[in-house]
Each structure stands twice: as structure tokens, then as C-alpha cells.
Length: 236
Image 1: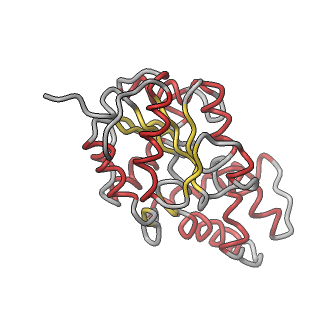
Image 2: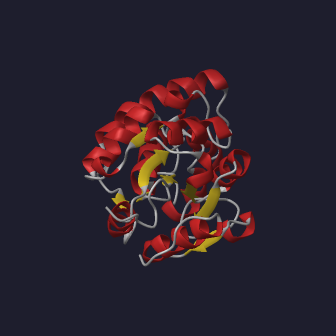
């Protein structure tokens, strides 16, 4: 069999704000909690940057934006109410970003192994990806609980790449925020950021190796980046 351009490469993906637009269901769940507390709901667009650091920070920032400071004990109580409600609507409105599935299939056809490296708990990540028929495309789905660390800690990315059977010198992390940038840089992986995700800091300001505005641009960006590291070249 002829060698394909991305044979041996691992393309690891952040989940929320990178692969899937999960904001409607995540913010919808926070708004459910706010309503139970008699507080005003969050506007979806204003709350998008709150996503990406895990459920507890999302709840904390959401309640703060609604005018209420949440102390640690109360935060845990809210978290325990958040999870079952979110799981019950995990793919009610969440959808893969346009072009996502086609890009994943193009990368796999050229030999890449695909992994998910997300700060979302593994069980929730698997549930979401299965509901959207994305799970079979990935060799590994690794949340911080499975890795023993959360991005930007490089151990998280190392765990995802190990689970996918790859090596860091042939790995690219595709993400949307500073946690992804920090993990990739600390692990020595390539970094591609999307411009349409959830971040307080614009993706362009995080100095990615490649910045893309559409999944249509991802396969070529991966090829350019891996070719610069000595990978074989070829059309995608």
C-alpha cells in the first residue's frame, strides 16, 4: 500500500467550540439553573467565552454575570444539578460546525489517526459524540479525568496521543482557546486554532502555527504543518 501523506500523524481536537457548537445546550443548562434561582438568563453570544474550562467555571462565571457570587460549597451543589440536566439535553441543539465531518473523513482517508483531547469529562464527551454520530471517527476520546490532568497541562495531550497510538513529533492539536495553545506548546505539538470558537482572547492573538476560519481549510493546514516537520507531502 502506498504511503499516504498523513500516515503516522495524530490530529487531536478540542471538543466544545472546535468540533461542536455546544454553546446552546451548555448555556441553556446554566440558564435553567439561573431560572431556578430567580435570576435572569444569559444571552447566548455574551456567554460563549465562558465555555472551555469545565462545568464549574462555566457555572461560576454564569452566575457572576447574572449578579451572584457562588461560593465553593454552593458551586458543588449547582454542579451536581447541572450535570444530569445537561446530559438530558446534550445534543438537543448542539451540532458539529459546518464542514467538520467532511474534514475528519478527509484526514482519516490520508492516514491520520484522530483523537479528542477535551476538558469536558470523558463520559459527557462520549455521550455527545455518540449522539452526533461522531464517536466512531476517533481512535481516542480523552477527558481530563482519563488523563489525570486538564489542558493546558501537557499531560492531557500526551495521554490522548498515547491512547491514539501516536507520537508527539507527528501530532497537531486543533483547538480554539488559550488552554489549547498552552497544551500544544508545552507538549511540543503543532497548533491549529479555529477562529469561530469560544475564547476570551481572539485565536489570532494566541500565535497558532495555522489559523483557520472554516473546516474546509483544515486538511491543507494539517498537511502544511506536518510537511514543515518533515512529513511526506501529497494532495489532500
